[in-house]
Image (cartoon, rainbow, N blue to C red; front, side):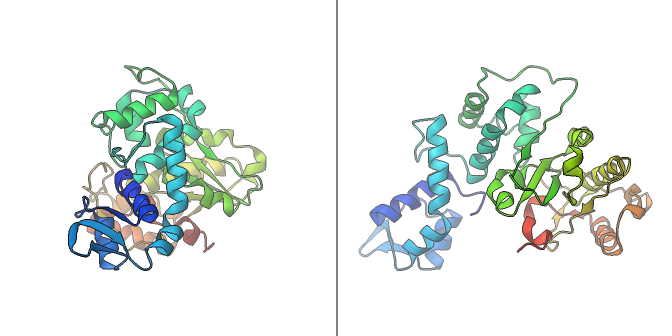
Length: 313
């Protein structure tokens, strides 16, 4: 499911699934255009003010959207009984809210300012994302059971966000929170996920010896900051007699310019290999990093497929 799909459109698609007909009020939405192009929906004969479900829509919706819709609706109703089609949040927002709810006790231990929290947890929207979305901000406050965010950040910011599973076969340390927002994917494959981005690398010191005996992998943005954190983590684990494997992108063709919105990591072109130590990387990794430096590009962690990077398709 596309992360930029809005709750309003998803709700309308569910109504179409049930009632077979909805007002054609979302003609410019990319998902609606996709359904029209695939001839899964169409305009009502003689009345272009309505969309109707065509052959194949029922099967498509049940296979790709129904289970997620029911999960999202149950969650939204649990925090806001008035959650309806007027909500403008996206699927990505809802997944983030679900992560906050799942990790609320941990998040409350080290409450930050609104902008810091937004920049860390809603990284895709930036530090002002919650400020500009009062409805979403209200739901975050309700989930955390607080009246407002503090005016100052704590001296130490450490969130131990973890997706546990009963029988972990390996542990993936993640720079960003995106893979933790779809926990069922990891749990179904006995993967435990840890969020260790930015200031959270110190949490690695507290990973139990039992977990350290599992194969360890690192998933990150392929930019200077993400790869520098990888080197730092590798040093921490080396001091414990352990090693970690850097996950190679599964979608390294999807490269972004380093001046992308809400992206602040830059390559240094005045220092060899941007100042990174080549000894931490394999030959193919060095080759890709050099390409990214030369073209001033980066690869977003979320654009990759976790299972493909782990060869668990």
